[in-house]
Length: 195
Length: 70
Image 1 (cartoon, rainbow over the protein chains, first blue to last red):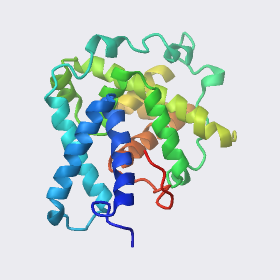
Image 2: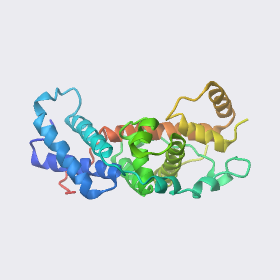
Image 3: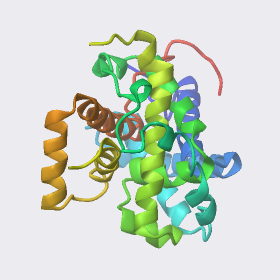
Image 4: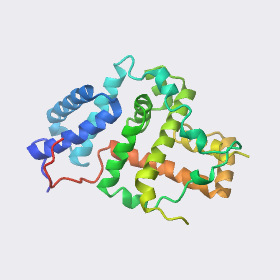
């Protein structure tokens, strides 16, 4: 039986650390992330009795954390620097992947990713994922995690940030290309085979 | 006929909005003939599910046994 992270000090330390990493990936602001995690933990302890034990307690606390993040983002006028988000990574790797006819360049053609399901059971993979998310440009990452972590639709992201939906699509696409390339290099290529 | 570059764009956008009929058909036709773009599309979907899992705090606990501090 794993210790209850809301009462066991060592488990609480680990839970708080994981929450902080997550919040920092979303907010890209350490001090703000600490405040949000603090808020979420207080809410969780306060509502501890309403936890029904269907999910793990960590999953339950993370749902509270996501809600707290969402409220924080919505209450901040300029959470995303729109012009930065739109220009970040503009002329980067994206174009180098394709020839002038839009076909994959030979060395960019996607290879097989071996055993992705096994990767997901390996804690080292999640560390790589975190490193790769951290490598994304700041405002790109904020938009991307609003979509992927908080599950906001593109029109909601538009309302919150003031970006146009078509620019949001561009930013999300760039983020995915960057994340994919990073995962390929740092994880899948190390054990890749060609077939 | 869509290019690989256009298909990668749709592989991303279909995670964010429903594609229209014309986009869906040309996307699927391209994937049937292009192994590279099929892999790319699978990788996009893998990333989507990994990020969702990460956001739920549902990842294997590497260090439940050690006491590393943040």
